[in-house]
Length: 452
Image (cartoon, rainbow, N blue to C red; front, side, top):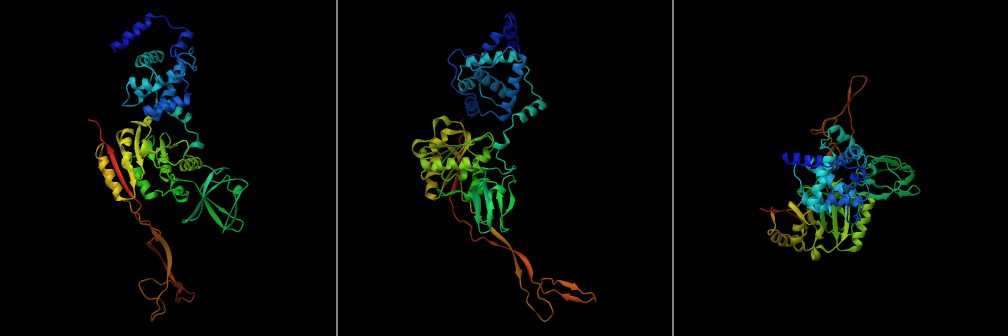
């Protein structure tokens, strides 16, 4: 408090700045940064991991700052410094734990002394009015809400160019891109795409012969069942286990090596949405390109970045050092990539390695002992059942109806007599599915050791 009062008295001795001085307070006197505002914000988000609420509050601060200082003009020379200062102040106001000013300065391309001065100037020009009440916050949040067309949500109508999953039966589904002039022909008849447009996902549509199919949204679960297999893929049982044990939640940064067909990547993207990101790498350029096209078809390209890189030989890019919340490895020799993965993870971050052979697991666990703790390996075996309704033929005995414990249906006639119904009884039967998969692979999880 005493320090703040000394700064305030010092500022009162100076004359109030005119409009020109107001605009130049945040000016960059060196070369103007060549980063766009979007790229600069993405850099801040990537390296500070500030919560979404911080950016909502920062928007309120900028709006309040401009109203309090009508002579201030935002331009290319001052916008970057204003952004990093505002976001840093908002982070201190909203979050319980923050990075130091020196770290924000490195992220924003400033010296610590420069950012300290900008913070003081910003607070005085704001009049230290930093409180944002809940009504203002909610109003601003709704205004800044994500474009509904970009959300991973399928509570909307099918439009021309959308990807839909055409469901005929549980073992016969196919992905179709809607084109107004196209038709789908199958054993049920001819289906016109033009009749699909405007219907909500999940609709039942009919053909010219009266047959029908369902139009389903391309969720990660369904996409895993219909995608083209460029490599062996992970299925729902393993995927759900991986997402849970890697502790993947919205806002996480996940690194994946071994993109393959993109089955797991799709589920990871949904788990980190809307503010997180998945960076996946594959050494095969053509395979990586095909995966990138699939992610664009499913509307996940904004959440997934696909790179071509040999992680076993080169490791993960240094730009992700200390930023990843989780790392997933699907490699022939995962132990070669484990040291690089350890450098990428945040403190207490988690790693998962998928290996089909137990020898790979043993070698990986030996390497994990160096930098990781809580090493565990699982094998997930899923057994599915088929539920069917079947008829049971009764056994005729001495009486006029079927024997056994099954009750007989009786119909009363107009003269008062009872007639036993001869219609066969039915019951629901459950039996193991013949399509149940056996061993798929071993999942090894480990947590990065915290520095003492």
